Length: 149
Image (cartoon, rainbow, N blue to C red; front, top):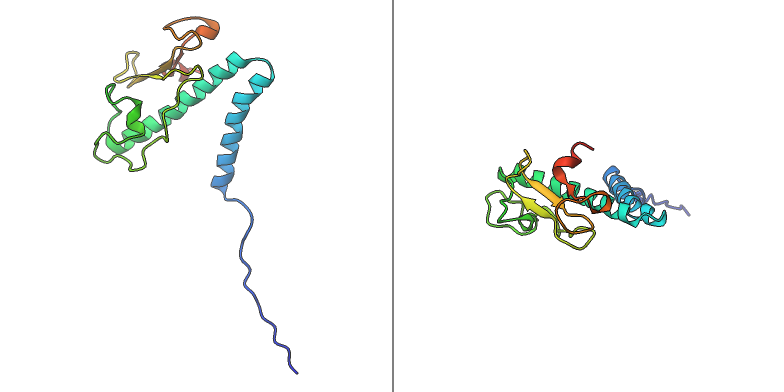
């Protein structure tokens, strides 16, 4: 009697794509910038680092918004325009952010367009004290100064 052998096609079931690996690396990097200072006893520095990372993330969403629509959201539209379509032509149907983060102290980021500091827009957090100005831990975190860092 003759035995028949069947050949089964093998499918790729494991491994990750480059994009998946890059996303994991970015997430781990963000977690490290948020968690490590807390572990080292520097919670305020961790909050400031988180605020800077969030401002940069919002800036990327604003750049995509401008690429699609040809302009930045107005001050009246605010950052909410990155989440919900305010009725603008060529707006990305999925939006540009899932939600607008609050700063690490629980307050909304301040957005002004056009900017008052020589940029297209101003985006800032008033820091720990919640007031304009300040030094050290109370210093504001400002988008127009992040470019210099």
